[in-house]
Image (tube, rainbow, N blue to C red; front, side):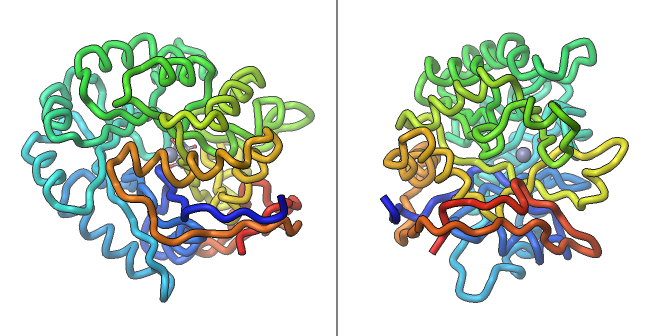
Length: 343
Ligand code: DOR
Ligand code: ZN
C-alpha cells in the first residue's frame, strides 16, 4: 500500500499553552486533525467556563485561514470546583470534559485535586450529565517509584472510582502500562483510554540507554518494552476503547535540555505520520482509521469529521526544530526520516 485515505482524525489530548505560543502550537495542532481536546493546565489553570471561553477565543485567533479545526475545551478540576460550574460547562456548548490532575503530578498541576473525596459531588454531577472525566492517572506519593505511579493509581484510586461512579465517562489519558491497557480492556464501556505516539514508538531504553535523551521525557514516563508491546497490541487491535491522543506538549529547547528538564514531547509536526508508521510496522494500517478517526468521536458522542486525509508513502524529514516564542522546540523524532507523509 502506497497511499491511504482515512476520515480526518482528531486529537483527544493536547497542550497549546497561551498567547504568543499559540502562533506555533495552533497551526501545528490543526495540521491533519479536525478537532483537539485542549488541556487546561495553563498558569493559572482554566477553572471556569468564562476562562475557557476567553482561552478558546485566543486559540481561535491563531487558527490558520481556511482551517476548520476546532478546539474542544476542558475545565481544570480543583478542590473548590462547584457543581454549578459543572452544570454551566455542560450547557455552554464548547466544553467537552473536566480534567483531573492529582496535585503536583506534572506541568502546572499544583492547583489540582488533593483528594478525590473533595470532588465527590462534582463527579456525581458529571455522571448525571454524561460529562467526560479526563484523568491524569498517576499517584504523586514520593514513596512510590515514578515507574509505578500509573499502576498504583489504578489500584488505589481508579478501581474505587469506577465502582463508585459506574456510569461516569472516564478517559484514562496517555496510558503507559500493561496494567492500564488491561484495566481499560476489561472495564465497562464508559471507560476508555488515549495513547500517545511516543509511548507506542519508544520504551525507557530509548530515553536512558547510552545517554539521557530529554526530548523523550514526558509524564507518565516511558516504561519497559513489555508495556510498549501491550500498548501496541491494544492500539492496533481495533478495540473501540482506545484512541488517539498525542499529548503534544511544547517546551522550549532550553527547558528540556536542562539540569531539571520539563516533561513533554511536541509531536504535532508529524503526529499522524508517526502513528501511521507504528500501525504499519504492526501490520495493522487498516486499523488506523478506527483508532485515529472513529473511536474517539464514538466515545465522546460526536459525529465523525466529514472530510478525509490522505497519507502517501513518501519519505521526508521531520523538522529538527520549530520556532517557539523567542526560542525553538525540538519536535518528537525531530530530524528523523519518516516514510509516510500527509498529502
Ligand atoms: O509530559 C507531559 N507534559 N505530561 C503532562 O502530563 C503534562 C505535559 C505538559 O503540560 O507539558
Ligand atoms: Zn497532557
